[in-house]
Length: 89
Image (cartoon, rainbow, N blue to C red; front, side, top):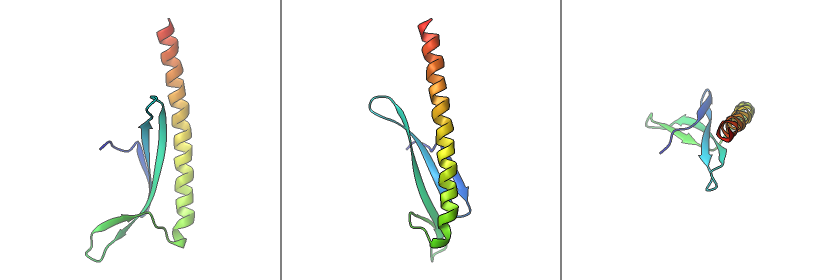
């Protein structure tokens, strides 16, 4: 299993960003929001379910994820442009 590109956290909430490659070789990103909780046996579990109190904090994590992905896409495009100009010489 590959590792995530980055994991953003706010307390028990997290947004994990994954860098993926399509069959055409293009890079795209996916985000998995989740909430961690302690089960009755004191083990930590993860859930995609959020409480009402989690919504604002998760929306901020998703905003951070969006900004991170947007910056990565710019960096990816700049890297491709640099690579194309170097290859064309």
